Image 1 (tube, rainbow, N blue to C red):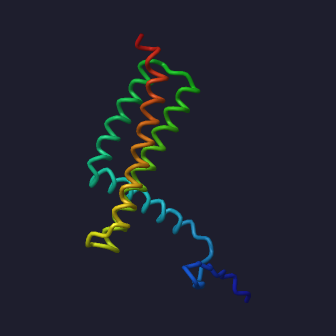
Image 2 (image 1 turned 60 degrees about the vertical axis):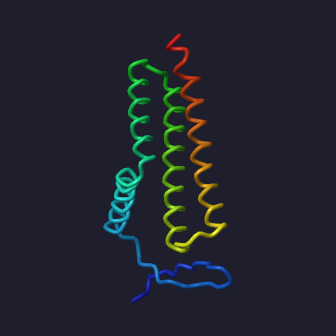
Image 3 (image 1 turned 180 degrees about the horizontal axis):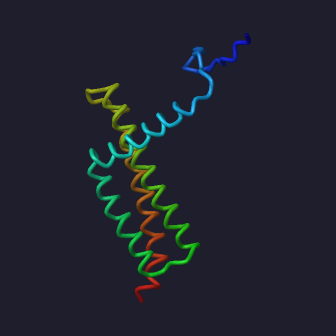
Length: 140
């Protein structure tokens, strides 16, 4: 019987690590999807900034429905919302990993956290600009 298992090659720093990879499993795919859902709920549950993003997301979607925005405008709104949520999730992940590997103060950890937070700020400002471009004409 032919062995159909494949090997995953993971590059870590100066060396390669070979790990056994199992064949495709629909059950494993659903399990990983579940991990992602847990991650989203953990983000919302534990991060106050995510609460703010959630409230603003609901408000913006409601405004889009009320003002009957166009399909193109919906695309811009959804893209802006997704970017902000993605930046917040990545920022939170970076902060958690930094806290794990360096519980004490380290200037490089501070830089990493500040840069990640800056990325959230940049996407949030961009989303506000998109919102103003779309919604101001409906208000005036």
